[in-house]
Amino acid sequence: SMTESSPPSTAPRRIRSFVRREGRMTDAQRNALAELWPRYGIDPGSEQLDFDALFGRHAPVHLEIGFGMGHSLAQMAAENPDLNYLGIEV
Image 1 (cartoon, one colour):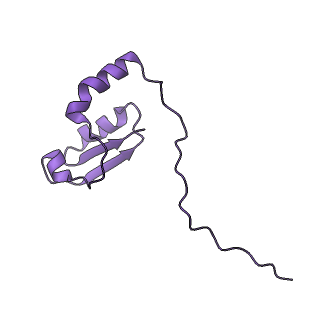
Image 2 (tube, one colour):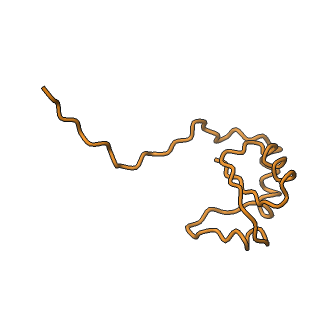
């Protein structure tokens, strides 16, 4: 006999970070964040970002999610100066 199956769920899944990072910054990282955020950071908001205004030029944007310490992101940006790079981290 055939059994009836329920339709796939369309409810949005909860997004979870695989690694909890609270409280794991070193003093040097905390100092760097405090010093560099005003120049390089973007505060989250509800408005769509204007990349041309943000970067001061029109260029394709490469989005890096989970860039860690940023070494590879900085290297990619240095090797591809015609692109704009935006990194998102927890």
